[in-house]
Length: 106
Image 1 (cartoon, rainbow, N blue to C red):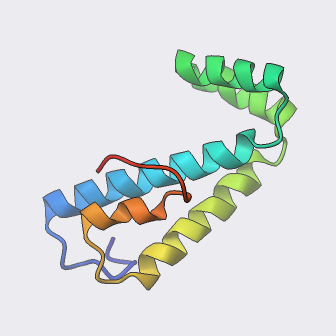
Image 2 (image 1 turned 90 degrees about the vertical axis):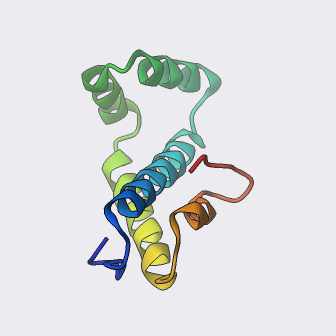
């Protein structure tokens, strides 16, 4: 958070902000990764995510979404760019980082 210019946040605020940023990133990445999947692929991906089997999920992405690392990197850069641009952000405002039409709980 210091790198983004938010050294003024106390520990609890920083924790909430980081959680909200992670949630926004996870939502953005998931949305991007699933937008071109067939219905069958989407069902399988959701099944793997819900199973919390990271190894199987990563293996599936290596096969079905070879560019997933690029997607994660691009979405992370977008979120961090928005955080840095907002400098005076409060943890409860981080929901704006989520894609339009979605909602995050802070």
